[in-house]
Length: 416
Image 1: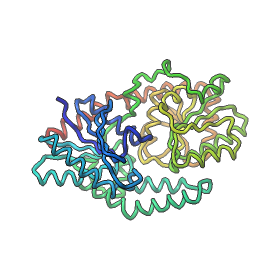
Image 2: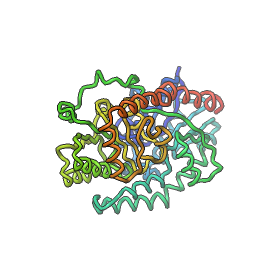
Image 3: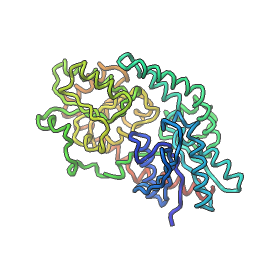
Image 4: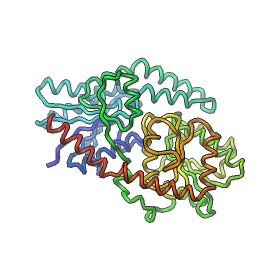
């Protein structure tokens, strides 16, 4: 019989598109391979339990909107109540709770209540940034190309993070039995925000795609319709996989692509994913007369099929806090990579070895790096081979699974 583990994801991993839920599903798949049964609790517009191939998803009704982490003060009582009820009814042994980001906050109340009842409970928390740092990145990424209402909203959210969310995050950290991070950059952020005495453990990770397509092969991946023109015409194909979010620097990439066009460099670019700034970025593409060369797909079901047909992968982020799931997918696919030299990115790739790193927020530098890769086939081949090698050395699902198994079984579960 598999041992149950409680995940507090906050967002619905069956519905939410983006890095957070992909990160949750990757951990759930690793937990299953480690012999655990993940029970994943998230807020929803209804209460129901669904079986998925990555675990059991418990949707918990919350009357508040939106389902975003900045609303955790309002969602937490619902998650706390439902999760505690489930644990009481289904388990009599030690309880291991694994929470993610500030969404893990309900675990604090769950742990305290069950311990008062004599239960053995441990709360493990993964942090991939601090809340204030994330909102600072969004504020820095907002500019006049974005609508006034969006800019005002971003500043209001930043003030909320300073006044409220920072306290919730600190309470979570102080109550946790273990804090996990995937990067030294995140360890520094947590120590700067909440004190140097906090004990933080390193835990490797990988993308969900590592479990679903371990070979990274493209043979069985059909060409997405948006890419057929570029492939048929033999144009260099530039792909990015990134939420349209102020932190992600997609406007910087669009400007760099306009400069590349003006320099007479032929290319086709595909920006996958959706997000709050999608419409603003679509307008920018039109204003710069890039419609014939740049396509914004919106959300897609399988980003990997786009990556595996790319000649160059670009990650133009202004802030990540940690690393990037899409960067790991690009490493897995063995694509030449250009990425911003920020946060955890230089911990994953080395400039000139398995990627080209550029200063964030500078279209000229980004344009020059893209031009260099398009024109230098030998460099593309070198980066491609080394990217795949880096993935196998650092991000294989077996490495992640073994580390998570050790964290659960040897260090925590039996001692809970």
